[in-house]
Image: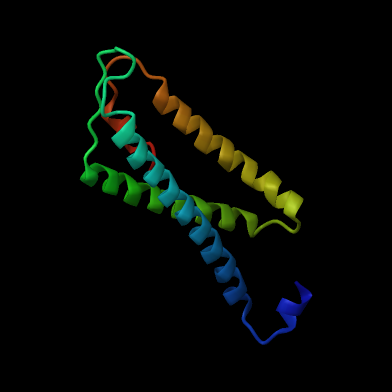
Length: 128
């Protein structure tokens, strides 16, 4: 880190490089998830699952919209994590600061999964 700080590069360039690298890794991860969903949708969900009255038909446009949503959400989450970790002085302290954000995302995701009856329209905006 010392060699980076003594080079004639602005500190903001170092920080932006770290943020963009995080965004790149999370973007690649989102693309892998969407690709896995597209493959699973074409192989597993084409036929009825184990005799149940369940049939899921996913078109290419829906997969593309899901991919764009996941890509932007991964960029948003990686930026939030980078902004939170800016206030930390050590890696351990950054992990401590980021853990409540991880738990919040996990709880919000679980709340949207366990609902009964007709969902409220306000719950459609949970990812945002």
